[in-house]
Length: 254
Image (tube, rainbow, N blue to C red):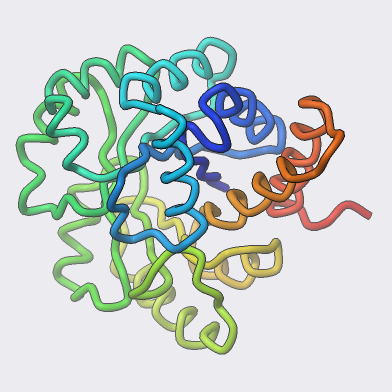
């Protein structure tokens, strides 16, 4: 199970604390989102979290510092997820060097197509970073195989040709048919499914043909709910987030 959290949300100070809660909740790996003003693949929850983070002053350097702080107290794999323009602005080689120094294990860059990723891969390989590519229902078979060959760690299988946070109601049969086909195409890497998973039942339904699942928007919504509750201490907020993450993996507590 992978869990996504936007860096700087709900505040830069809270992010590292929340990464610990997500870790405690049983995440097998964590995606730390790099906020961007134009997150092309993101639905409203993650768009909102990016806007909040940017307004609060989060920077790429701040995100790398949060990653480094997390790595000092946990060995859980940590990937940075975001878009290519901020990386290029930072400097691709410098970014990869700093990410590796912060203890980051890899990158997910949705708008970086495989045919344009050669230079980024050179820098990432130099610093020992994995690069995860994505496939979607409209990805041709030969391209799936190429993505499988070029990906490191796993292949991210998007359930829909739409935005994160989109519901799965009425689509499960079609999505599972596509996931079964994708699992036949992806043979070199684990296949993880994401987009639209909000509950443990969703995760179970979509993991029949994959090796795991990733949840982002539902976690952002839960963090927003918890932070809106008056009178909660930080410890109580962390416990609630950890409990929610645990419920995604194991089901609701009895």
